Image 1 (cartoon, helix red, strand yellow):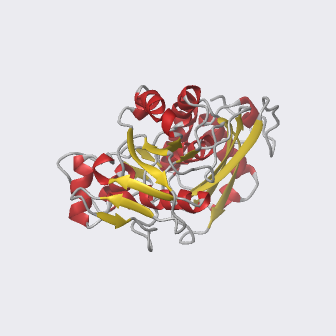
Image 2: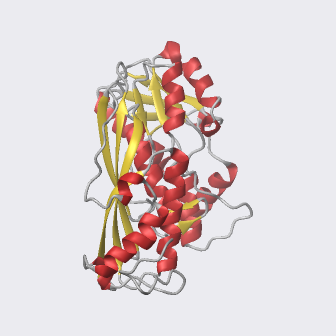
Length: 348
């Protein structure tokens, strides 16, 4: 980066820390934005320095989603709050069938937070956005007093466009539809817990955090009439299926033996007294489609790197009570209810 007369002393990105002046709106804040945020999140719309991003959207219906990220710890196996904030919002936009276009990011920083950690987070965010082809084009930064925050919170907002003829919504599941998942359940939540509690497992469990929009695009090419898409984040598979059942006014019947769960995740959940069906995911999706399209959709999902472990796990049924029921591995049946309370707080 070239020198700037406004800032005779460069930010100390190795030993420096956030202070209240970095949120004051003055010279120090301009330096933080220029030498850190604009340095990593380099995009023409962002470096203009306006309070908004001006762009012309392509044809189609616009979709917008926003998401706050308060995860603890900030860094975990398979990612960090920076990449997670990009992936999470891209996925929320993509679950409508949209092609994500742009992101906005808001940072709440705590006084005393190391600039080295902030740079690491923003760099990770930039790498995730660049890899996904969905740039951060506008944002905001605020600083709170020491002890009034928890290092850094990030809110990201995404905007995308849905092609004509695509209608994917949580209220479109119909009796007879087939339920699919794109891979193993519970990886993210167990990765966070293992890091948070300093648990050592023989095999490291890594978060599945990933941007799913390219997988979704491939699925739509194969089966344009997908009825529902949802990423099972907080509350996991079980809670997300209950949400969809209530939105659509239907029941769900799933099979325990068909649900992919990694052996190491299952073992960790058993040790910790957790049910993997309720553990968060950040790089998986649930799809519901007409029964005559299920095999074609499964093939398309398994052909994509992020869907190689995809599986059909059940079907939509008529049920005025909107229950999600599971056939267990022992041949019995049980209600898979909403998550009661919070299994793992601060998970995303």
